[in-house]
Length: 527
Image 1: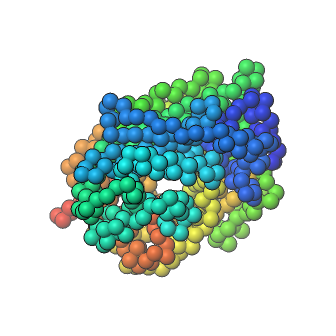
Image 2: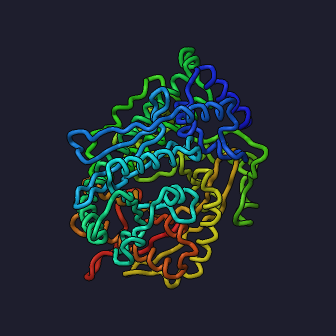
Image 3: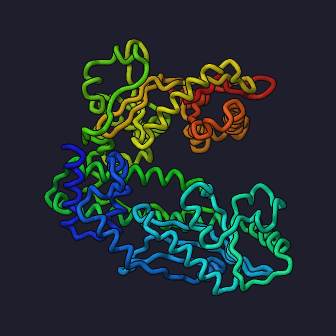
């Protein structure tokens, strides 16, 4: 089945269930977003019959609702964008700062991805301005949007000014992106002094702000996962009742599962997150847990520029089956035996099967299908499946790493040699993108740090000699050197680099060198 044919089938299923725009768009954005963006259209939702009209109708009926602070969050106020049916399309959080002049700090504003660009962002920011006028209060926000971005004008058109226009260059670097709105009704004799006191108060409250912001984000995201799960159960109700499954059903439930797993890993490090909003609130039906996973796309799209790019010698020597059907060949290769996978095997006493289920992914808490071992002409390589949205970024990174390779002689810090593990091939097929690299005797830095925190004997070793500090120092030194060497030309590529730490995978232990001066890593690989 081709991609357009599959989109038509999704559209028919959505229409059959009578699903509203909010549920339908949330469902599509979480489980099929990467496939939609393969289309060369102004809006990916054009592919779904009647959905654009439904979006417009939903937006026309929206209104802004204000919610007063709850007892345990006395200074936090919220504005929400509600549909006629009470569904939430966006929200704005603000914090009241009581100083000599009343002030509300805009903590966060967000509109659901599918409803962006339709004026709702302007609508809720305008409501915030009206709120400030009514309260006779100053508005303050940290605008991370660059001035050349079109959304920046939302604020300037409503009268917001940069903080430096009011207090000059006296503020520190951390306030450079801040903007302020001062209603005409406010008459202050010493505005600079008042603002400095407000900023000082804001700085003290930053940890509390981040904590509450994280709590809100976790709560809303869990609700979103719950809504998508319910929508998928409606979308495939007939299949579930008949006890059958299909590629689309397995793909969308797998996508939901991998998104959930990724979210779980991120929230573990959030400031102030205590697990109050637990992911256990979302439980999968046993029928869903037994579904075989479908982590990759099978849908062809003729207009898409598929192909292989990279080392010509390697390309010519690839097996015929790999050249003819890259996705099927690569996805049948064995999983890469990484510490995450080995830990699971030791815990369960099981061997991972190629026929994984949704339950397996939930048990793993990571997706082992993304990395595959490829033994070719006496060399072991790793195929990594990456998001198709990162295809062009991957090509740019490959070019950047070639330049870094030419400077390898200067890349060594505190006894550690930095080496590049270049991207040998980039393959695009059926909406999937794969990167081929040589396998190195190391693991991703984040996985290494996770092992040092979660495995008892490694945690003890780390607390004694500080392996994590050694890893982080090498990464920081490398980043600083690259930024100095390449300046701002490759800022994004430098930020997106992956670091591989020397590791004895068989024994799950870091390969470190110990001498009288302390510990060090022999080699760290950039990828």
